[in-house]
Each structure stands twice: as C-alpha cells, then as structure tokens.
Length: 561
View 1 (cartoon, rainbow, N blue to C red):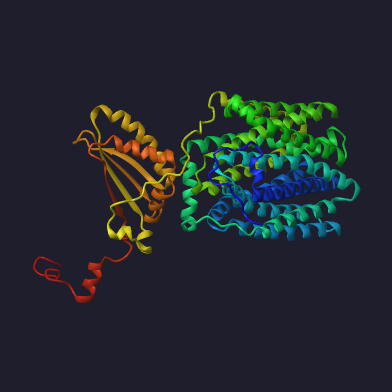
View 2: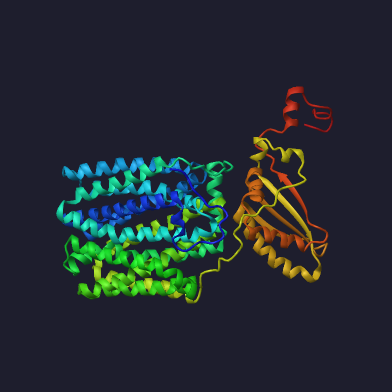
C-alpha cells in the first residue's frame, strides 16, 4: 500500500472527495472499524457493571477511565507526534491495544474481571488512545490537499458517529446472545485490522522538521494556545459545553435500565438513535454553518442538546425518547464538528499536533470531569435532578454566545517566512552552544506623529503574534526625548527557536503584521540580536588572575587593607 496524493488541488470536489485518495480511504475505514469496536467495548463495560449492580458513580467512571489518560498524556503526546514518525507511533500504539484487548477478553471470559480491574484496563486502553489521537489528526492534513482538510475532518467526524450508531446496537445484540467477553474480543480484532493497514502502508515519508528539545517544544505549543484568542475562545466554549453535556452519556445506562426499564438491547437502541442523529448531523452541519455561521450553529445546537437531556429523563415513553435522542445526536455533532473543524483549519502546520493535543486534553478532560461529577451527583441527588440541571446548564452555555460569539477565523493561514538576513558569522553559522542561548531581539522604529495611534494598534496585534510564534516576553517602549521613536523588545528562549520563529512558524497573517509594522517606520526599522551571557560561569579575567597572580595595583598597597 503506497501513499497517493493530489498536491495543489484547488477544489475540494465535494464532501467525499478525500475518500478518492487511497491511503486516506484505507485509514478512514480502519479507524471507523476501530471506533465501532471502542463503542462496543464501552457498552460492554458499562453493562457488565450494571449486571453486577454497581453504583451510578462506578458506572459513570467507565467514561472517566477512558478520558483521564488524556489529562496525563495529552500534551506530551502532542509534542511526541510533532517530531516522531507518526506511522511508527501509530503502529506501536495499535500493537499495545491488541495485546490489552486480548488480556481484557481472557480475564472477562474466565470470570476474573472485577470492577476495579475493568476500570484499570479501560484506563490503559484510553492511555493508548491518548497517544494516538494527536498523531492521527495531525497526519490527516498530510494525506489530503489543503483545500480538502475541512472535508477530511468532517469525514472523520462522520466516521466517529457512524461508529456511535452501529457499535452500541451491535454490542447489545452480542451481549444478549454471546456475552460481554465476545464484545471485548471484537474490539481487540478491530485494533488488529487497524494495525495491519498501518503495516501495509509503505509509502509514508514523515515531514522534515527541526528537532526541538522536548521542554522547549512543549512550552512553544502551550505558548501558542495561550496567546491565540481564537484557540482560547474555542477551548473555553468546548469546556463549558462538555462538562454538563456528558451527563447524558454517563447516566444513559441508568436511564435505560431504571427509567425506561430496558435490557442491553434497548440500551444499544438508545445509543444507536444518538449515533444515527450524529451521522445525519454531520451531513447537515456544513449547510447549517454556511447559513448560520459558526457561533449561531453552536448556540442553536447547544440549546437543542440541553432540551433533549431534560426531555429524556422526564418522559418515560420509548417512542418519544428515541426521536429526541436523534435530535440530541444532531445537536452533539453540530457542536463538536464546528469547534473541531475551526481548530484544525486555524492551527498552522508547525504547531498543529501540539494544538490538537490541547484540544483533545480539554475534550477528554472535561469528559472525565463531567462524567465523574454526574455520577457522584446522581448517587446523592438522583438521576432525574442531575439530568435536568445539566440540561439547563448546557443550554445556557450555548446562549452565552449571544454576548460573546466565537471569533472569526478567516485570517491568512498559509505558511509565511521572513528569513533572517545580514547576520554576523557567529549567528549565521551558529554552533550548538550559540544556538541554545537565550536571545533578546531589539527593533527600533521611527514613526510620524500623525501615525502613532495606528502604529500602536498594529503593534498590539504584532505582540500577540510574537508570543504565539516563540517570544517568552514582549514589550513596546517609547523614548520621551525623541518623539516617534519606539523600541520593541522580545526574548526567545534560544537562538534556534528565534530562527524557527522567522523561517517556519509564521503564517501569512503573522507575516503581514510584521510588514505592516515595518511600513510605519521612516527610515526602515533597525534590528539587533543579543545573546544572553551565562554569569554562572567564572569570568575569564577572574580565572586568568588566579592562574597568573594579581596584576599591578591589585595587592594591599598603601591605603588598602
């Protein structure tokens, strides 16, 4: 199996065009099958605990055990995925998941699976997924032309929700006819299929990247997210939605068995209704976003999901609950795909895996928190009250977008570059010691009095750009003795990172900000690069003095001592 690509394509060719690329299609199908297996396992684990009469808190912890690993490994896995061979990383992860799935199956079949051990195994498989997610999501833009990235992301969401529609229903049938161990075995088999596809894929060539120290790479990724207003607002909206909304997923097994008096087959039917709505929503959302825009789409779908949560727990009729869950599935995918698609399209290539790892951290971290809180609260206050409150909060989270809508993301995200020129030899041919030294950049501007206000406005945006792309600190100062003379200073943790800041990390938007700021200065701004001196080492003069004895005038002499 070899990689096929269509570089330079200008048209998307429709929502399903990425499936025309052979390796994307093969991986998409493998991931679809794996997701079906994962949903089957979730249903099997939850129903195993229901059969053992576990408390709502313990049942809800199945969702938490799957999500907590992202809290622990999300950021490191994003950094790892940025610099290693992503195919090899995925092969290693799938191999581990096959082994873990086999162990889970055998222990369950022989009756050795306790609730605590089940949660531990769920945690281990979740840890493997945490390592896999940023690598796979960052891999997708390498497989399809840039014009198809949004369609590829949408297809990934469709695959997840086809799995959500099929997996629970199949799991219910398998549990009813063969038992939970066969559900776990089926999941292990899906991991094996994904592994075979990866092993047969021979044509992958990892992108050439400049290696960065792990700590520096981690800081750079977090710094980018912290200084990007788009990322901050998207992640905040995601967190506020996920925490209350996950009460539906965490407590639905109890609603099915207690409120609706359903068997495992019936629970699978409820999840299938949610999944079917999600699949339908994936087709509806592109049109909805074009008509409504991202903010109003998230607002509307959040309110619908919250209303559905309240309805499901207050109405005892299965024939009412099923169509309501279909609507809930449409609403769920409306929120998730809109926020995820915004993130994937916005992040520049150099920080994509790290940015997506932060997104996954928020997504799964809030899933873990929301599920645990819902389970604990339901144990104390009852399922009905918790679902009503959670539904109301979910609707309010959507309504906040009336006051603070999501930011626009139509900036130029194409790669930009402003190569460093006219450098002294020590910087142009920096050795490892020089490349690792902290760097201070000083830029001096001379701005006409009538343009100062506009200049300062542009510099406010440029400061955020500098921080996103690598600056640890940034400031703009004015010389009171020379009106119109401004000095911009910023520090970067190493000369190596400052070089990457110029040559790899700029987008077209960042580059345009630099050029706009420079255009205000007459004459052209001057730039100086200063490297930090490490004063922890003994100064050379002091070492020479100790070796040769004190020089003239350094002894006690008259007037000393």
